[in-house]
Length: 440
Image (cartoon, rainbow, N blue to C red; front, side):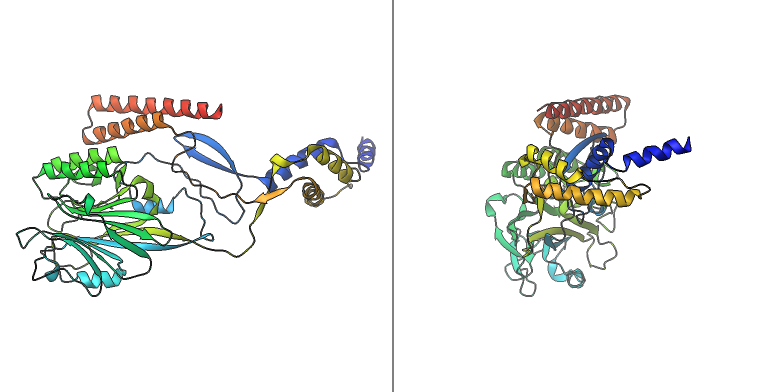
């Protein structure tokens, strides 16, 4: 029996077996040409074939259905975006909001500005008057004082720098609300829309007016920082109020998210009413949102710090990386070339598998060089939604969000059944959309 096995190996050593070549071809094609990125979306795997150089680290995470309040610190570390640190250089836009209750006497706030190196200071209740205007060093000030009174008022102060260009957008400001609206453009020409409103308590009609203005503006990259006097379970208040319910509906309709960290924004009460609200599309740009409870500022409201990542394209003078263009392969030439290269390829007796693989890979790459053209590396586009996402899925996602909020607010059997139905319907519609997209 031992002699027969030895004899068989001696016969096969003179030429490579066809089965071995086929297996090796598959292995090399997979390892050289492709990187497979499995994105888990709503409990169903969707395989996307993309070309990613080995040096680009891709984090694979499970996307979660978002509520109105999400923790910015966690999602930043689990971002689904690819890491292009070597292609882009990043800088942060640091914003600080506080209901100052008189900026002139808000002792301690200047220390916080210097300590955190704030770029943009947002204020409510500045108590600005003609004789006591809001000023801070050489910063540019945009303000709206309260008419006829020495109280109230809103303002935005911009630190002089070369990273941002600001323009006031008075057309979005309401006469009934003390607010300031700016358009901020960074070095990469990305535009952020910053609104700083102050909505008084017990005036739900003003909250409704603000929400209507947000809806009519149809702005992207929107950042809202202000004292909304809006309480909701969504951002960790112990109960809702009318302002909070109106704001919740507005956020659902306009795809907004509250990124507060859940800490109370008032020192003398368990309230979270000084809010940082942003558009969903810039959610992954928020690095931190922190309520500065440990800072000693002489005011009852606590400062809210928001750190937003901005980016600037990095010009790299190195040669562009190329990839194999399989669509342009000449299969007849491939057949003749591989036959020529592998006709003399021998399987040496007792050769280690790694050595055999390396020899085979070298020959295989020679065949590729002779028969497959190369093209410049394509840019990887980061999509906010999966490729199969459509308007129908979007509508059912909105219904699911509403059902989740309703059940979280009032955990009744009826609301639980509504939530179960919404989850089932959303699952069905996503599977349908995936199937339809796969059949295209």
